[in-house]
View 1 (cartoon, rainbow, N blue to C red):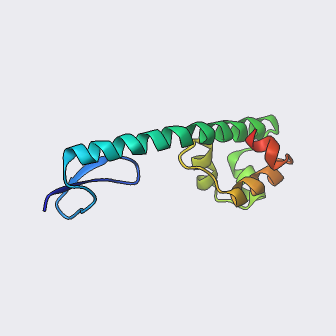
View 2 (tube, rainbow, N blue to C red):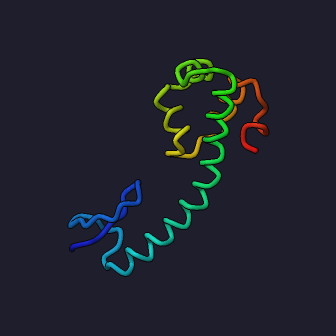
View 3 (tube, helix red, strand yellow):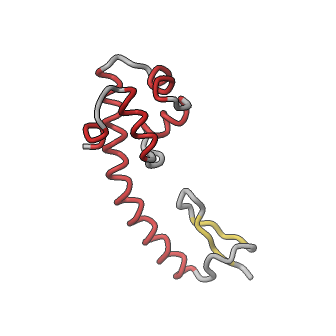
Length: 108
């Protein structure tokens, strides 16, 4: 059966093997829901990301230095700073410690 699917990046794809949904209207409804969820999540994620960048710059740290101090991979930190995905609580705590700020200050 021919079906449509949405990949993890929200791209609508036509696949013959996918069973996610089988009509374009179902797919568009699912995409609208996904977009509204991502928009709500992205706002908070972007705020935290810009706060991390601002604090890092204020302290004169490179991504490499902050990542090493927080025990993260530099690529992971770069993705967080670009708000490509929301950080987990453990990651936020590690970044806050590395920046010498409280978790509350990091996410406000």
